[in-house]
Amino acid sequence: MGTVTVNAESEHRWYWGRGPLREDASALVGLQTPAAYALALLSIVVLSTIAFAAGGVTRPWLLGAVLLVLAAVALMVLAAAGDPLRPLPTAVAVLLPPTALAAAVPALTREPGLAYTVLTAAIVSIQVLTAVRGRLGAAWLGLALSIVVGIGADRVAGPLATLTGNLGSNLAVMIMATVFVAIIRPRARRIHALRRDARDRSAFDAAQEAVLTVRDQEVAGLARQARPLLERIATGEPIDDAVVGECLLVEAALRDRIRAPGLHDDDLAAAVWQARARGARVLLLDDRAVGDDDPDRFAPLLASAAELLDSVGPGSEVTVRVLPNGRGRLATITVVDGGRLSRWEFTPDGLPA
Image (cartoon, rainbow, N blue to C red; front, side, top):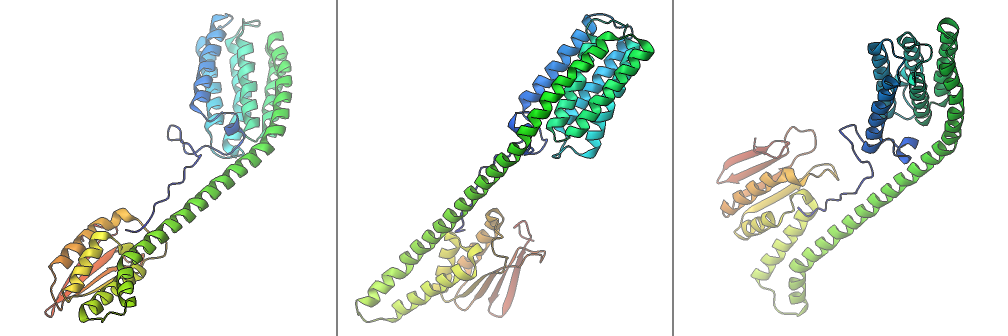
């Protein structure tokens, strides 16, 4: 219908129906990709296997439940929406790991094989992810609570040298995560801002190119219709009624392009031309908001209008009107022929009502 559709490629990739990628530091380091989730699941399986296989587990069901909780928290921090991480998932990431650690102590002997190493590794991993998601203070609080729980467990059920030693060594991991977050998050904001600017510029350039393409199409159409007549007039030859009639048809066609851009279609234009040449009066109107265009909806309307115009004769009056937005109808076609009025309506989907 004389329009050009612009499809600007977006960098907002979609995964598993979760929505577009968050524009934060986690996107830069690949934490929102399927590979990251696959690696997380593999780590969960490997660490759980190590925790059970190394021995020292007195209540397997309880340790299994604790590991499931920690795995769920880690995946939640990875997938949760918002940047920074929203308050509810942040609270879960802070409170559940130390709670899970306290619950795991009765499930283990004083000196289990590697269970405490697995638990503390899972806890610090969750807090590192929380820090990367923009909640650095909450991540430190979660680790501090886990250390407090570990010290308390050491006093009550201990000594638990493996637990307290591993929690202490995790401080170094959090310090490195803090430095990483301090460096990467400000740069991530700038990088994503530059990417948005690039997308906006690409969309603007594509829109400008589309406008120029439409303009070239309109100029070419004008040249096809009007230039032969103008050249004939320029020769100075006598102008007869046939030339005048053709000039009137060209003028009407040009008015249609201005008054009804949404109804510009080659088949309809040909049908309108032939109907006017037979002596029918045809009026095309497009009263929609500027820029509101969905070409697919107009196919039934254009086909129906062209079919009706092919059947009208001299003296008939045909009006094809696209209605303003919010009218409950897309368009109407009215035909007045010999004092008899016929009217057709089309739904917002473009189908005959």
